[in-house]
Image (cartoon, rainbow, N blue to C red; front, side, top):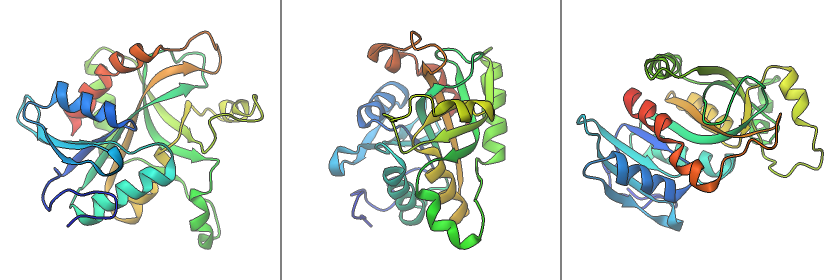
Length: 236
């Protein structure tokens, strides 16, 4: 049944959902990669679609919006109300490392955070480590290699801050080997863990903190995501 944030009917979503942040990117994926996509939800212009891949796999794609609170809401409702088993976030990120280049794909096997999403787990008496599903991670690694691309697998930072008052704060994460920064994976991974579901975050690099001249244009951000979407659909 519909939730406060999703107006889809029962059974409207496939077991696997690809989840970009941008609603228009969700539409772009549905228009270009699903042969019979039907829009199933549009509350707050957060668009969701379900259709078949060219290989016949039933897949859904739905936007998450920006930030951990937003993806936390949508992932929870998809998992608990619509029978979704797997969510694959397909997003963009900025890299902290010199050997990761524009349009490389990062497989986020783990997620750190500087945000308060982890605060709800204070009762644990420690810090919860948010990690991806291993089988999805391994499948993504193999699929990227099959595309003759270089897979980067490791930790990312899921940050609440985009415009940081300290322009050098990223360096402490770089020294710990964190590959890059985005804004959603920690909430997705912890939600999946709580509900015994599967999740993975794939990221296309569109910015570099090491070299600020390396920055994708708006058009490149859209067109440069093709390989990542192909990998996500292969493992869906």
